[in-house]
Length: 292
Image (cartoon, rainbow, N blue to C red; front, side):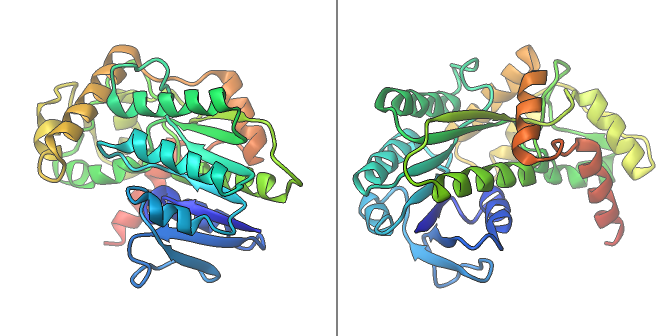
C-alpha cells in the first residue's frame, strides 16, 4: 500500500514528507526531476507533472492514497480535476486535497474559485476525500526579512480586519494524519473538511508589534497600499498571477479571513496540540537571522 504525494517539493510538500517520516508508510513523491530531487530517506521520487496527465496516470499505478496539491497556475482547475479522475480510475481509496480558506467567500479570486469548483466535484461525485482549507501561510512572511531588518517595516499589506495565518508545519501534520488514517483504513472513508488556521486574528499593526518584540527594535506596518506589492511580485511572477494576488490582498483588507473558535478546536483535536502561533514563528525567525 502506497501514498503518492503530488506537490512534494515546496514548503507544504516538505512539511508533509517530514511529518510522514517514521510512520512506516511507503511514500512516493511526484516530481518533474526525480534525478535532482532531495527527499527524506525512504521516499521514492517518481517522475510526473500534474500538467501531464499520462505521467500522473502512470505514477498512480499501485497507489492507494493520494495527497493532491495543485500548483497555482492558469490551468490549476483542469490539473486538479483530471488528477482526481485518474485517482478514481486507478482505484485509489483515499485522497487528501489542499484547498483554501475562505474559498467560498472570495468568489472573485481565480485560484480560490478553482479550488471551490474542485470541492464541488468532490461532493457531487461523493469522492473519499479529506479537504484541507489552509489560511494564508505564516511562512510566506520569511520574504519580509529585508524590509524588517533593513527598513524597520512589515510590508505585507494584510490590512486591519484580521487573518488567521497558519504555520506550514501544521498543514503538513494535518495532511499526514489524514493520509495515514485513510491509508490504514480497510476501504474508502467518508469525506471530511478541515479549516487549517492559526490561533490569532492577525492585522498589519499586530504583526508589526510581534516583530518589534521578536527583533527588539521598533517595527511599523507599512500600510495598505498595494503598489509596492505589485512591483515586487512582477519581478518574478506573470501578470495574471500578480493580479490574482492583489485581488486576494484587497479581500483580506476589506473582509479579513478569521477562523471560528470551532475551526480552531477541531484542528487542535486533529493535530493533538494547539496550532502554532505567529509569535513563535517570529521569535524563531529572529533568532535564526541573528546568527547571520
